[in-house]
Image (cartoon, rainbow, N blue to C red; front, side, top):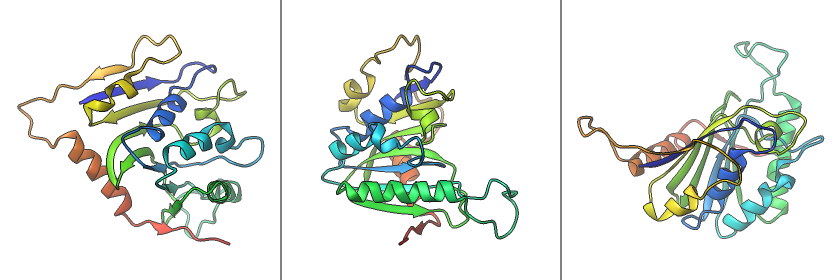
Length: 219
């Protein structure tokens, strides 16, 4: 089971940006599921204009983008407070993300968690609704994780998992950066009974889409 582990450690290079692009543009799929606590498209930064839209149009032209977001609770309230209201910036930013994709003729299925408490960062490449690869980690679809040479950036850790050996070259291709780690080959312990990576990717996808998500409709 091949995986790739990365850590962003400089302002000049974002492994997450590189791997997300490879995931979305993977020749093994036609659609993508993008889950993020925050999606940034307002103010000084729009992630779609920073290259993400190009990857989506290239990789999902014959398919769709499924989105799940986000942490919308008001930052001035306790997240445990009842009847918390959505944070206008992040909610409007998510709406703008959806509008921008639809304006670019991309098919979009948007969802939100009922309690507005989605915080998982997961991207899954799909082929006819069957997962073929996933990128899981700490990176949101925001400037500090995705952008290069920004005035603010975060240390972010992400893991790429794929099941088809035919994708090895696509995902293992070296970065244009001097990283001394990142590629690992997992050897499953024969003494442990466990489902294979295909089963686990499928189970992850079903857990997300089979959960208590609400289809996101807005004016």
